[in-house]
Length: 214
Ligand code: GRF
Image (cartoon, rainbow, N blue to C red; front, side, top):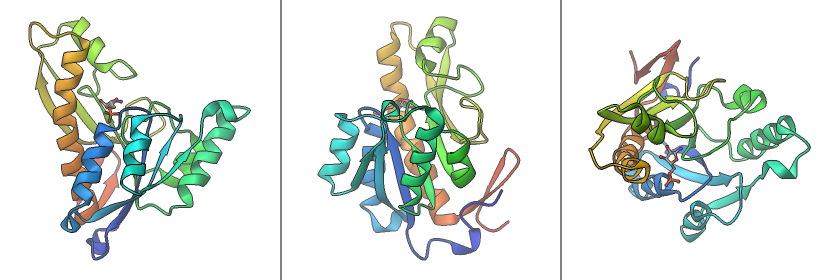
């Protein structure tokens, strides 16, 4: 499935929509990166599934359009997913970045944005998918874990892998210290690889992502 066309190599900045649910430190890393015109992308809008979060405040402080779509405002997940797809589509993004967005996107969203939506997960896929990657890694006793940037598909953290970064688990770690250490590397990975996707363009063939012309 083709995504940002390689032949369009960033003559104009790619349009990003970023979806968040919480603190938004990954969003902040993207905001900081996109302040550099050479990054090759700009954030057109930030969306959330809940109000009152620091992620939305960060966007507003930087003058970025925001929208909020709580699942509880809709009769069911299907309607919410359709509304999310419509709202994101209004901003005509080249790439959608789920940055700590704690909801699964559904069929309506993927029909429009499949192949050009990435998510970051705080574990080394395919290990420890789901909401508690750092906790599950700690409980299992792994000595290294990390973060995974992947193209979103219909599964839970199962999509084609764009990049991974390895982070050590230290003897005294608890879930919080481990997650915070992962997030340091996760933010850098997100910025580095979203930047490449925007600047170089990419194509997706099955689980393989190829950058630029190939
Ligand atoms: C990140 O570790 C993300 O992978 C996970 O939740 C965290 C969000 O952090 N799903 P933030 O809101 O970007 O600070």
